[in-house]
View 1: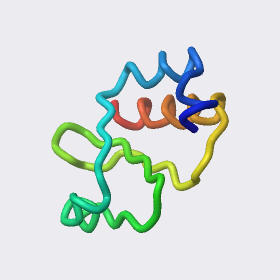
View 2 (view 1 turned 90 degrees about the vertical axis):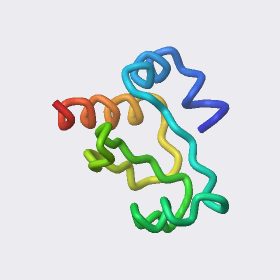
View 3 (view 1 turned 45 degrees about the horizontal axis):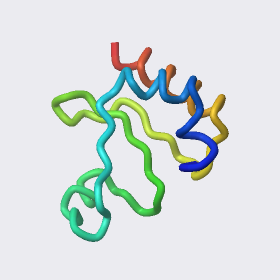
Length: 78
């Protein structure tokens, strides 16, 4: 996704509506256990209090599909 999806202009525009955080699975085991992370990549949309709003349960997503997922998450978070 790093070479095809994330560089896409529409993806960048959608991601800018969030505060992206990358967690290292190996060094943040407690946090990964809290959210039951079992495989990577694992995309979660959380409210500031840590409440999960949306989870993207698939690996690679083309740009348009990731934008749709992010917009859906944004609608749920309101």
